[in-house]
Image 1 (cartoon, helix red, strand yellow):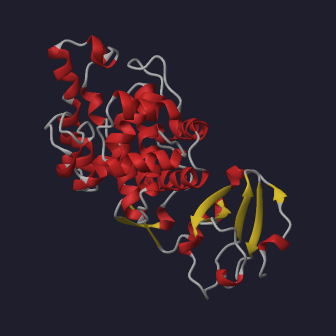
Image 2 (tube, one colour):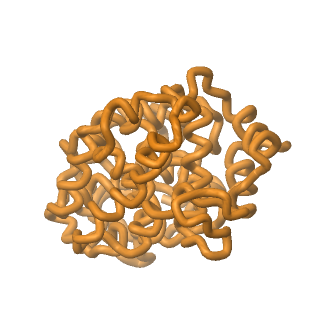
Length: 328
């Protein structure tokens, strides 16, 4: 089968499919499941039948067809014997496809719909969804990470949704910066998801108070969520130093005017530089106690660049604008 345009497609339920990178399939080997190409939101075309040999060079793909699709029920057969998530090798047979983790299942679908409405590049959004599914697999398989994710269930709905938004936007920014290693993207996504885990240690009256209304003592309590988050994660064997650095540094910025250590851009962890920008962007576009009038994506970029003086890692900010196709 040399030309995917020769094959007829049929409407299907997109929930029945999962994305898989083309890199998962080694040329010359047989595919273990039926492989599909996504033509539109509800149209998928089968390009390889189970048992067929992989020979993508002789197939006429759309230029940007980086992701292929398989039936959800077949997913565990096609990702190989091992799956790397956030630097941890997992046996794919042990990974449940339908995670029941409260935080992720409560927020993921609605957050991606919001992100889609912001106008991000479609391929970047799809990649972020794939990374999100990998993180869900990790949570299902690692008890210590599952434990800390479930701690986040004690946070209010706004904070949970914010964590999901920051995780997804971080991956989109990183992809726009040409980050390609799945292990790094997964680590970034997990760290971004956990960046505010220390908030669970704060009293409700602090969480429900707008930051501009806080006195010095209240602001100090609020800012302590960074160290509290580090304390929660430090004893967990599945949490890497990079993830802890994300939690510690996600409120730092380029000119060294952030907190808690007021370090400048060149001293920040590379993952934290991305998450710091994603955190700010998410705050500006999402409604919360601190932002009763959220901005659209273009206005948020203008606000960060002009009102805030663009205090974030310049390559990350450029990548954010590229992913949004926004010029300022």
